[in-house]
Each structure stands twice: as structure tokens, then as C-alpha cells.
Length: 541
Image 1 (cartoon, one colour):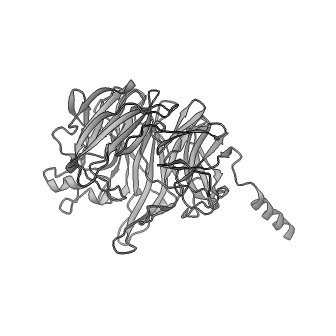
Image 2: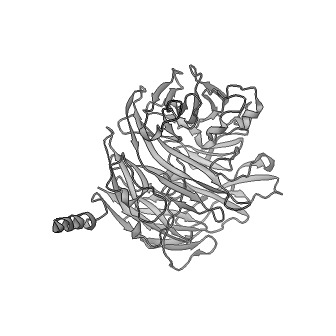
Image 3: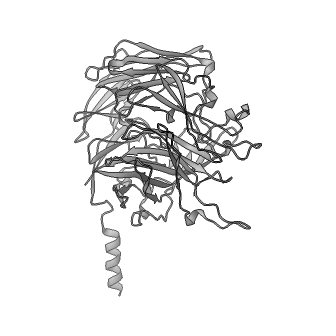
């Protein structure tokens, strides 16, 4: 009997922890300084965090690592860095010439075969305006082209608060996005917006995208959508008591701020602004009443129909999503509702009442077109709150929990829905902005399947994708895991990479700069003190 137990012990604890369906390559760290270029290689590696999820078209062409044939290209401060996509070995580092002085680097985009760098003026309390520019970048020589002015915004029109868990700036600083086919580029700041075509030729611009509406009534621009024709769509906030000006200041993302103390039954409708070179027009959904909407997202399907998808609440339980809905804004048909089945862990018995159905703290909708012409909807449980560890400081703490993945066809029928269980704790250090713990997920399409990639404690590696036993609250004993789903919703969970292979791993990031480089490979960076950067490449089989 003792021998049997000993053999069983060896079987459980000597098997390799890596999934046999994946392999990896790790590059050496390439140290760099934003001002001095590359420094000698030194130190150990760790990974940094990022939370949240948003569906942004062509994210792999906005910042991070660009794929140029068999070469990975990235812009690090004032230096262009290239790596071999197969071996991850550093090929060369090219200093960027004639780098503009007194300019803030907003970011770099790969657009229509060219690399475009965006800059803004340095904004201070004394600045009267914020000015934005772009310059084309030659990645072979490091030379920047002529500076081209984009737009100018008065300083008093900007809100300079940094993004936080419960408060997001109403007036975002400069940002850009691409259309789904990559043929159009949008640059926006506050009320001003520019759309560019190939060669950075200006297609159209406007100085007042809100029309007669005030900026306070506007959704976060990240939830807007640029279509392949260069038309921009954005969502307005709508309240039941629309005559109450105080409601305009309540931001849509926070559940508790969706309603006022005087109006406990807030009523949303879907109103979308269509903005193009001809002006601003309004699209309004009918047949919506007595329901509260959240996390609205716009999308064009395979038939080029404009859809709005979001979560909805019922009764006064604003922290529980009763389900999600989709509306065809082209035909203005009645919305299709998809109730979420009651889950046991969300159904704690209450004294003197029945539990409220739905999923707690579901937040955000990410929409993906599938190869069979349908739509994949992804949402995540996110819950957080503030801590005040000392006077004058504040710290975000909370958790990213289960992921709800649903598939619908273009007729609005629900094909299947899966709840994928995970539990990640995060805590943002107020002093240096470093986040402790593991956050959120990243969606990638690999090998013809849907990969929901996340960090988890290795103690959970032997559990099915519908159960979880251990919180992932730090980088210790962690691994890169994936929920893998096929088009029929059949799934499994695998560990793709053991993070203990990295030394001094204290921080993780699988939202920023993770991207596919082939049908079966993806990469993500690892950092040491934000100066020493390496790459991990994982190949799935």
C-alpha cells in the first residue's frame, strides 16, 4: 500500500507542468532608456499589468510590436527596435533622427504600409491650447518626415484627471483608432475629430462631433466605432428624467452612478450619433423601456449591419446583469434579449426574500466576428473599490473573475453560452502605480479556435474550465493559462507557459502588446524596472 501511494505521488508531481500542445521561446532582455537609446543588457525580468477589456479593431497595428514580414518592429522612446520573428533575437536598434523637441510622444501606428508617429505639445496649467501633430517614420533609417498639424484644443476644454477604476475622464486626451479593414484612421481629441486615408491624406474633419449635445452626454470615445467608409458612430447617454441637468455628470460606467437618489428607476434608450463629412445625424432604437442598459458597444457584422450590443439590468439590482441584448440599428428592429441563467455562487440566500438572478458585476462587451460568419460576445466580472492606506493616498483593489462567452448568429439567435471560471486579485500601489496581482484576460484567435488567455495559480491547472479552487492573487506559482473554445462551444483549459521559468516575476501584463504573429504563435513582452525588455513567444499545436 505504501509503495502504491509513493508511485501515485511520483505520478502526480513529476509530470511536466506544460501542456503538451504548446512550446515557447524566450528572448534575452534588451535594455533601453527613452532618452539614451539602448543600454547594456542586465537584470532580471518581470511583467507589468493592465486591466479592462475593449474591442478595438486592428489593435495589433496600434502601438506595441508590429509585424513586418519576418521582423518584429517596435518603437521604444527614441529608438526603433527590431527582432527576428522566428528566433526573437535582436536584429538591430536604430536611433530616431530629428526627434522633435518639446513634444510628447502619443504613440505609433502601422497604417497602410507606413509608420506614423503622433505627438502633442507639452500641456501645463499655463498652456492655452493642446496641439497635436503627426510625422511619418522611416523604420529603415529612423528618419522622421515633416511635421503636420492635426488639430488644436483649448486647455480649458480638457479634463486632465487620470483614468481610475471608478472615474474616467469625460474629455479624453488624444486617441486614435482604425477601421476594421485598416483603410481609415481616426484621430480625435475632445470635440474635434479627423479621419485619414492612405498616405495620411485627410478625408474629412469636424470641430464639433457632438452636434447640439454637450460633451457630458457623450460615451467614452473608446466605445465609438469607425467603419470602413470612414463614418464614425458614437453613443449618447440617455436617462429617464432627461430634464435633470445633474444627471449629465453621472458617468455611464459606474453602476451606482447610473441613477440619482431622486430617480431610482432610471430608463435608458439607445441613441447613436452618425458622424461623417456631411454632418451629424441621429439613430434611435425603438421598443426599449423600463430597462437599464450598460456596457453598450457598436459593431458592424459580416453583412455590414450596424449592431449595438450591451448588458441589461432588471429591478434595482444594478450590480447584477440579468442578461445581454442586441439591436439591429440598420433595420431598427425590436431588441433581442438573452437572459443569463442563475448561477449558484451568485445566489446566496437572503433573509426575508428570494435571491436576485443574474451575474454579479459583469462589465464590458467585446465583440468578435467568427470564421463561420457569426458573432462572439465576451464579458467579464469586474469588481473593485478604493482603499485609503494613508492620508492623501488612494489604492485600487478588486478582482477580475469569470468570463462569459456567448455566440449568436446574424439573425440574433443564441447558439451557445459558456461561463469560464477564474479569480484574479489586483491591487494598485498608490506610490508608484505598480499593480500587484493578476488581471483580466486577452482574446486571441489561434489555430482556428478561440483562446481566452489569462493568468492563474498553477494549483488550478488540473481543474476543469468550469471550476476554480485557488485565487490568483500574486505572481508566485503562476502560469499563462487559456480557455480554448471551438465554434461549437466545446472547450478545455490548458496551461501554456510556466511563469516560474522567469526570474523575479512580480508583475504581469497580458493586455498590452500581446499579439499573434502567425496562425499558431503569439508573443508578449516581459520587463525589468521598465528598462529591460524581453519577449516570450508561445506556439500552440
